Length: 67
Image (cartoon, rainbow, N blue to C red):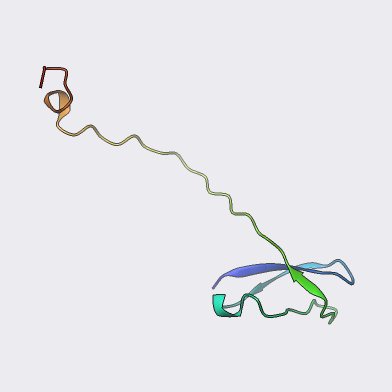
């Protein structure tokens, strides 16, 4: 289930709520009960190393033998 981050405009608290995507735009009260909150735009960081694709056909599939 996705997690959404909110900030309370009244007290400034930032908090998260897990909810289905169909409910992503529903209001969320902060832990102090304030209803004036706004959903924040979250960024996602993805890390890793890309692998180069293997050459198909080896030398004869490339052009080094005139093919």
